[in-house]
Length: 351
Image (cartoon, rainbow, N blue to C red; front, side, top):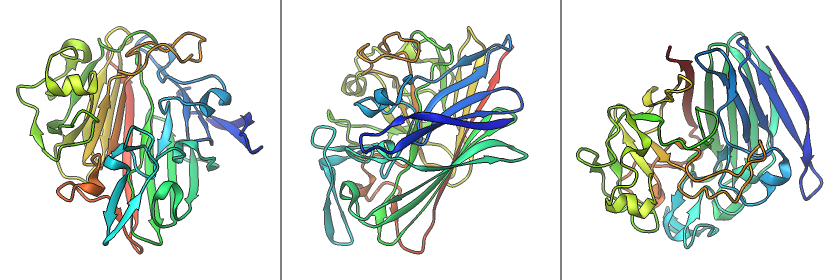
């Protein structure tokens, strides 16, 4: 059981980034940098007891500093998309940075994924972890209010990865924090044979720019029905309009059960390794992204190109574009309130 640290390179302004290595009682190992709260490696056992890295990422800080699809990053101030890069709150219109066509994606050009967080190692009876803190100033990327954020990453001794998010503000602002790791439970190769279950009877359809239409649509009878475990690739090439818009899966599912209660959201099984990942969350939604835009132009930690659909994301969240959709669960945080959510990724094997 240990938390150790080492230099991870310099930012353009000269500040130094640090890479932390967390090892639990079983030998499960996670590496995290304070730059963007990025999880660079996560080594978990397969059914033979052999450890393997199940997240996609880069080997060096310099690769994370250039454009990449948020590998392993901590996302904020607002995870997912805000249509038109603007929203109205309390009668005032706020204009945001555009970084996804005419929209804002994952907090803007310099979201939380591109900030140097303050990191403090923790070692408890339950496991080892990091406490990450960041003060987002009023007006950052166009968002109102000074937002104080704390995120705890805890790797427990029974192979659960717990994310606890809290935030407070001095002015009303939308907040939607999440974690953007790309998983491949086989360690490499396409992820289409992974078997996915999503505990969701509905999803939020999108338009061509991947902004929700406002509809809550049933999954029954569509390629979006993962209520029973189904290979990711089984229906990913269907001619369904929503599949065409996303070039595969890149949608928000509306989770069953009561929001704010920790409940099962997803289960992923990789039959060759036997690895099983189960996700529980207090959030109302989860974004399933099937790595549709990975194209081999980026290089992974093994020096090999990161190919099409070699990683998938399951991002627990409030719904995309909620600041412009009063019918969706609210993402507005006001002074005196505490934003608080929890997500747990539990790893095991099927013999």
